[in-house]
Amino acid sequence: MAETRLRVRSVSEIVDAAFALYRRDAGQYILVMAVASIPQLVIQLVGRRDSSSLGFSTLMFTLMTGLVSALTLTAASAAIVKFGSEVYLNERADLTEALRSVIPKTFEIIGAGFLKGILYFVGFLCFFVGIFYVAARFFAVNSAIVLEDAGVGEAFTRSSELSEDRKRHILNTLLLVWIIYFLLSVCVAVVATLLRSPVLTIIGSTIFSIVGYPIVALTSMLLYYDCRIRGEGFDIEWMASSMGRPDTAAAANSATL
Image (cartoon, rainbow, N blue to C red):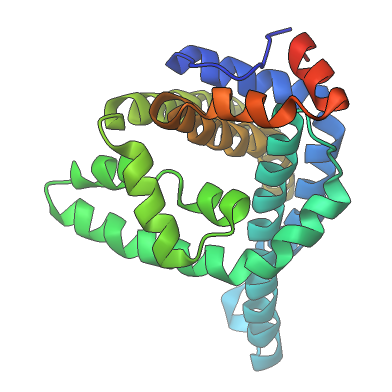
């Protein structure tokens, strides 16, 4: 299994370390994503009904479920980042505590996502390539909110600082993990198509996102720390701060999962 001690990593090493973290606590990540995905699954199944049969009550139910889905999936993604960070830093990791700590930040993360969506749209208008610039510059917005308790504006500024002179490295890492995710999703879609069942297709795609998305979130978290190590010497700072904690220091020396 790949080692995950704090150090500078190449693009492929970051993704490999994300898989290592995932394998270590796969059940935890799958559980939080499964619970968070229930509202989304309900929306998709209800949406299969003939639109002519949808009344006002059903429409309101769909809208409310959609709002709940956005909140639960945002909280789950943030909890994965928080819990994965604690494991990566050999701190006391508790998924329940991680989820509890990120829930108050959910609306900030959603607000930041809305602002990023606007920037992505502007980037699309700039001959499409602007999308990649936005993705690279603001890659760490969510991580800054979750791991540094930054506000929305501070998170955008923080991400810009971390991405300085590292945008190609960031973009290559994000592209690699999303390509892997996309290729695996295509395989799932092909299998679902062969089954010729819309319901099974929806369920299959939901299961895939439950199992697969944590890899993307963990990669984003590791990329955040990689940029901190490169630009701020975070690995040395963390080792120095952990010297007074025997349990953490011992874990840091082993540094393997």
